[in-house]
Amino acid sequence: MRVTVARIGRAHGLRGEVSVELRTDIPEDRLIPGEAYETEPAEAGPLTIARVRVQSGRWYVQFEEIGDRTAAENARGIELVLDADESDEEDAWFVQELVGLEAVRPDGTVLGTVVDLMSMPAQDLLVVKQPGGSRAMIPFVEEFVPEVDLEGGRVVLTPPYGLLAGEEPESTGETAGD
Image (cartoon, rainbow, N blue to C red; front, top):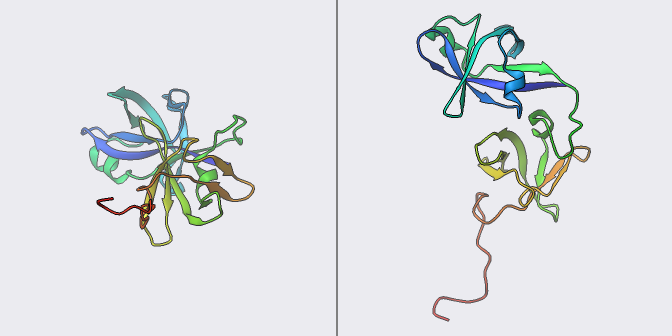
């Protein structure tokens, strides 16, 4: 299975350094000088890591093949990919395994389709494209995502009110002034 390790972000400085959006839980083991990565799109690579640094929790990479700011700006959005075996870790999934899964409530009501997984400092966010086209970001925690069923092609969601577009608050039967 091909997995994305990182996506190249904005250019940083004049010598071709770029920020990267991590797609791995172990960047210190993946982003090491001398490591060459295939890319998506394939014609952009391979790219070889020359230097890596972390500043204020953000990862910056210099590639041997990217030598100036213009080249760095043109590389934005390129994904660094590798071939990997399926994860043997329980309750761990690759982004590629989640994208395309149908998002449903426990009763089977379809909420949309998983289109991405964003790595954020507090927790990952599952990005779901709803039938109307809106995108909802659901914290990828057991309370809101109690079940991931890869074989069944679905993920069960129990998001709190307000995370999904078009939701109406549940009526309590009381009216103002009661």
